[in-house]
Image (cartoon, rainbow, N blue to C red; front, side):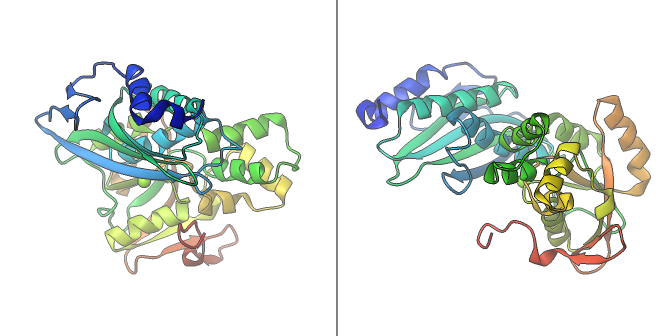
Length: 336
Ligand SMILES: [Mg+2]
């Protein structure tokens, strides 16, 4: 059965039946002209959106509808996590060709529900439109954070240390492997990088810890590649940064894939993107305190660079001491 047989209202009814769960603070969910929720006192509301287009951001031959749904939600959750906020409510807009199987929509929503369920997020509304050629998924996610505690990109200071929460490059290695399926690697390695690419884990608890700690000056999530993302902090904070390529944490499976493809794993880690680890800055004086807080909650960080006074440019130093320039590299949505 495709969605044209069910019709827009039939499809909405089908979705609604699976989502009718009460959520704290929710006054009115799906079914009215708009949703209503209480605005908690002492908190600021954080909001983000992200559109995923079939053929550009997801490929239906590589991912199940459920995986596509999970990842579309996870990407938004990661942005809320990067602000130090707790995600709360989600709205979903879908653009779908008439011939889309109902099972695709069912799968998408199963993925949304799974991902949202693990973070206590309620899906409170959305919209559906016919889109002639390919599907798109546009998610709006709300979150909340204590007043004045949101983590920004614009507040890094010269000489702050730059740290990242986990290994980089796994997702890009996974994509490279999907695009080159003939490459031979261990099944374990294939699984690990595929998982990193398809099923990113948003760092909500870590973001909350960084926010509450008061020890961090700036933060974002690694979605475009560590080099480009640190560049975003530089631009917004109007200072520079040095990134030590030899300090970048690489997962063993990322290294194995790079070796099999005859590529430098740092390419995946610095310019690949979609790792959804958090990258953050803090004064050196806060290092021990932050390490203690992180270890106490089962998190870790790797220091990969330092903010510098001067032009908002990221200088990458390779293990041989040679400087790179990031401006030519990284994923750019309009050039890439
Ligand atoms: Mg982000």
